[in-house]
Each structure stands twice: as structure tokens, then as C-alpha cells.
Length: 279
Image 1 (spheres, helix red, strand yellow):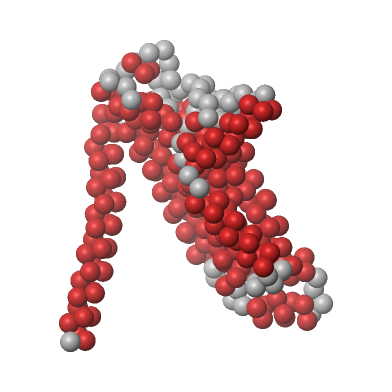
Image 2 (cartoon, rainbow, N blue to C red):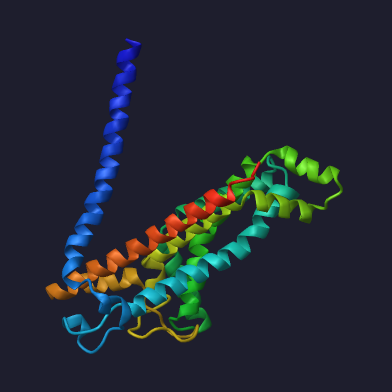
């Protein structure tokens, strides 16, 4: 009976794994097949030209650069804000602190909010302040979107570090700030994972930037300029009745997938290297 149960659950695990892996290759394969007619060097090196959305010449370089600006800027800004918060939660508050528990619950709630809520909030603030859609507005709203992910991921990593590490640091006369630096160094692989998750969420989101970053066929030259993103480019091109434009949408989706895959592989390699010599 026990062996039968083991075989049954092992079969379920194999089937589940096969479904996930098969779904991945099905999605990527569908994107690649539909993107091939429009996939060339021009699509990633040129900006849209006149009649681009009617099937004429041009590319999606504006959307690639805009996505990297927004996702990269938001991840960096979220990291700068998240590190002090995580240090405070783990070194200046007890793990069982009521305030710390409420803070973590708040971040969990913010993590679960749909991105359209962040976009609507950002748009309301922009209207109140008299701002227009811009690269800066997109970065700020995406920062709010990814910050709960960043905080909770780093917080969980910090919680797994041995408590004796901090105690040993204090016993040698280190201050809380110096101890925080030691813990952050030990948590570097987890911090890289948090950056990866935040970047992936930021570069793939469409609802928050639709209202705040706007859209432009040009590469943004300053923070006050509107910026295109790959998800919005995909949405607009798939809405076109022209088959060639729809094919370009799949090419943009393939570029977006390749960027996320490249960042993921790089982060894994860096995390594996940094994990050496960690306690």
C-alpha cells in the first residue's frame, strides 16, 4: 500500500512537471513561430517610422530602451528604499514585534494589489500635481509596484541567516550598522534574487505604465519625456488588423522574453558565484 501511494504521488509530480515544462515550450514556441516573419536586425535597432503601425518600416528600439529605463530605474530606486526598511525590521525590531508584523502584513497586501491600482493611484497623483505622462512618472509608479516584492524577498532572506552571526558581530564590538553590513553581505545572493524578481515584474507590467509613462515613438532623452514600453508596444501592435504589424508584436514579445531570460541567467550565475564562502 505504501509503495502504491509513493508511485501515485510520484506520477502526479512527473505529470505536473511535464505540464509546466510543456507549457513553457508551447508559449515560447508560439511566440517564435509568429515572430519569425518580422524578426530581423531592423526591428531591434530602429525606432518606428511613418506608417509603422500600417506595416511600413521601423522597429521597436524605443520600446526596448523605455522598458529598460523604467524597469532598471524602478528596481534601483526600490532597492535603495528597501534596504533601510529591511535593516530596521530585522535589527532594530524583534522578529516577533507587533509593529514589524503589521508592516510585513502591509507589504504582503501591497504585493497582492493589481498593477492597475498602482496605475490609477499614480495617475490621480499626477493630475493633482499637474504632471504629464513621463519617464519619471513611470519609474516612480513601477517603484511602488515592485518595492513590496523587494522588501519581502530580502526580509525573508535576512530571516534565514543564523542569529548567531549577529550575536558574534555584537560580541566583537560592532555597531548595529556594521552588523547590518555583515548581514547584507551574507544575504547578497538573496538580494540579487529580489532585484531579478522586481525587474521581471517591472519590465513586464503594462497597467501601471499605461497611465503614467505614456507612449512615444522616440527614445526618451530626459525624465520629463514620455516613454514607450515593450508590453504597451505588444498591446498596440496586436490590436492592429494588419498581419505584418501583429507579427511585429510577437517579435516584441520574443525580445521581452529574451531580456527576462538573459537577466535571469545572469542573476543565477552571479548568485551562484557569490554564494561561495557564505555561511
